[in-house]
Image (cartoon, rainbow, N blue to C red; front, side):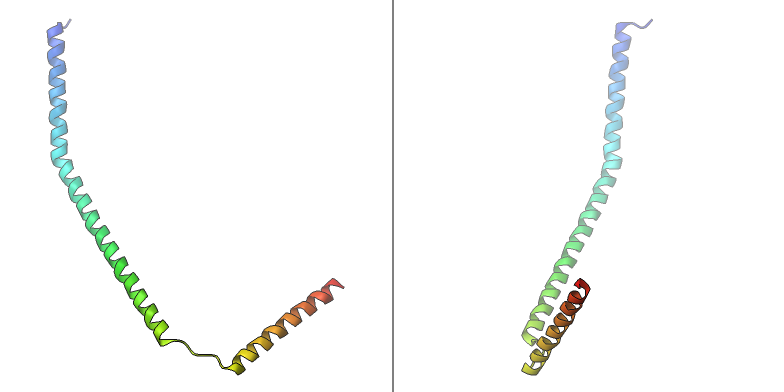
Length: 101
């Protein structure tokens, strides 16, 4: 069979081979992974920047809308809105009363 020294040498060679493979992997694949992560981080920064710009744009538009103001309802419009709403409520309650009978 194999002597103890031959087995030990084989283990050392296997460990050396594995270490070489790991270093080669790190050199080749590691560079590719670094490049991919760099691209993703740059894309993420662009997304964050575009989101900030979009939020600022919305905030500016909101402020302009508030400054501009909206149409004011006249007293006649408010009175009519109350009457219509009240009429709808009366009709709804009237239908409920008829269905209860």
